[in-house]
Length: 167
Image 1 (tube, one colour):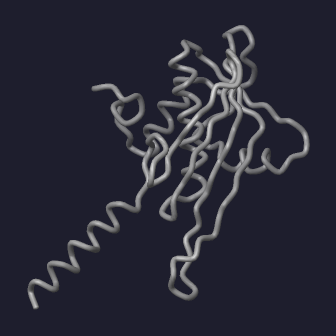
Image 2: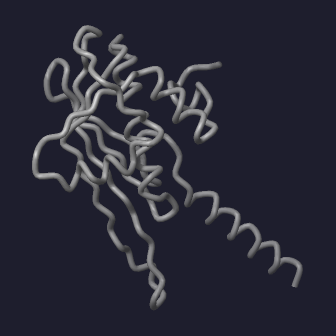
């Protein structure tokens, strides 16, 4: 009987430990990917799993966009061509589903002299969804370090998790 409880406990621990998504490169549990379209333009994607909400997916795509801008030495970046999609996935039990959000955005790196009014990254999820429904292109400028710091703080991420560097 004790062995059975231990096995159940271990299974629950393993299943719940593997279901959460964090800020990470795309893999089995979701994550980000990007493709460089031009010298200063990237297409960034973030794939969530059933344990992450759309807001977190949008925050993480904004974080990845800011990290790309920082890696390229830019203090500002521009986002546009917003797309969100949430798939309803049947988990095999009648009436039990998971919702897996996917977000896409195009990012262009901006020289300092082209920076216009700034949109705050940590509160960008609602605006992102509205922009995704718009028929016309809406561009938003973001401050690279402000975006990284705000989202890092919102999710208690470490420098190691965000930039892959030791603190």
